[in-house]
Amino acid sequence: MIGRILNWDFGEQLVRAGNEADGSKDGIPELWMDDGKVVFRDSNGALHSLDWKEGDEKINVRDILTIRPDGIISRNYAAQSGEVDIFVTNQCNSNCIMCPLSETVRRQEQRDYFSWLWKFIHILPNDLEYVNVTGGEPTLLRQHFFEIMEYLKNTFSYAGFQLLTNGRSLADKRFLKRLLECSPRNMRFAIPIHASKESVHDAITQSKGSFQQTNQGIHNLLNEGQKVEIRLVVSKKNINELKETAKYIVSEYKGIFCVNFIAMEMMGSAAVYREELWVDYPEVFQKAEKAVKIFIENGIDVQLYNFPLCAVKKGYWPLAVKSITDYKVRYMPECEFCKVKEICGGFFASTKQLMKPEVWPIGQDDES
Ligand code: SF4
Image 1 (spheres, rainbow, N blue to C red):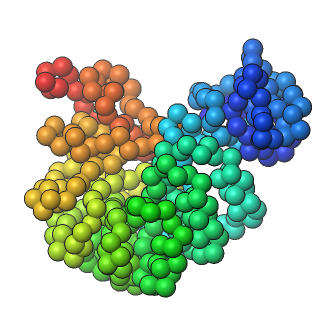
Image 2: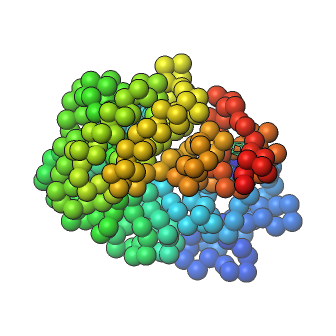
C-alpha cells in the first residue's frame, strides 16, 4: 500500500504524481510529498497540505494514482515501468476456475467505471512503451471496446500493444474485421488454450462450447496474418495434458508468434479452488519441460511466465522471464541468500502469502 491521507475531504480523485516546480499545466490534479506532508493541487490549481500515513510503496513522478474517499492511495500506472494495463471490464463470458478475479467481482455491475477508465486513459503520457488491454473479457464491451482501441491506436504511436482475450468473440469474422479496423497495427493477441481436448478446456473455463469458439478465433486471426501468442496456464486440471496440447498447437496453429507457459496468480477463484488447482513449481516445470521441448524442436518461441528460477532447470533459465508487474513481485525470506535474486522474477504477492512456496536459494557454485 502507498499510504493513506488522514484528513482527505475531496472524494475520489484520479491524480498524477507531480512536483511543485513543474506545476500542472493541463488542469490534471496532482499530488507530491513535502516534508512529511502530502501536497494536493486540485484541478483549479489550489494547493492543500495534508497529513498522511506512509505505506511500504513509494510514489514516483508521473505515476497515476487513485485517492479513494477514505484517503487510501493506490497506483494505476507506474511511470518507471512505461507499461500500463487498460482494464476494460470485469465481465467475462467464461468462468475459468483459476481466474485471479473472483466470480463475485466478475459479476458485479461496474457503475461509472467506463467514465473513470476514459479519464484514466486520457491522463496517460503519450510516450508509453507498452499497453496491455485486459479484463475480464475486454471484447464484451463491443462499441466501447472499439472506441478504446481506436483511441489507443491514435494516441500512443510508439507503444507496443497486447490484447489479452479468451478469443471467443473472434470466432465471429465480422467482429474480428471491425476489431482489426480500429486496432493498432502489429498488436499481439494473447489467448489461453487450456488443453487440446475440448472436454478439459471447457471444464476449466466452465463454459460449454468455449473451446470451439476460441479455436475458431485463433484460426481466424492466423488467416488474417495476425500475431498470436498462445498461453498455457498450468494447473492440476491440465498438467497431464501439456504434451498432447503442445502437439496440437504445433499441428493446428501454423504461424503462431509464440507460446507462453503461465504459473498461476493465486487470487480470486484460483485462491478459492486452490486444493483442486495448485501444483508446486518444480512439478509444474518437470511436466512442462517435455511440452517446451516440442515447441523448441518446431521452431516456436516459448517462455515461462511467473516461474521462480530455483524451480527451473538451469539450461531453461533464459526462458523464465521476469513477468510479474513490479508492484506485485515478492520474494521469500530465504531469497535474500540467493545469488540470482536480481534476475529471478519471484512470486505474485498473493501466491507468496497463500501458498508459501518452498525455495532453494542458488549459491555461487550452482550459478557458475
Ligand atoms: S531462491 Fe528466491 S530468488 Fe532465488 S531463484 Fe528461488 S525464488 Fe528466485
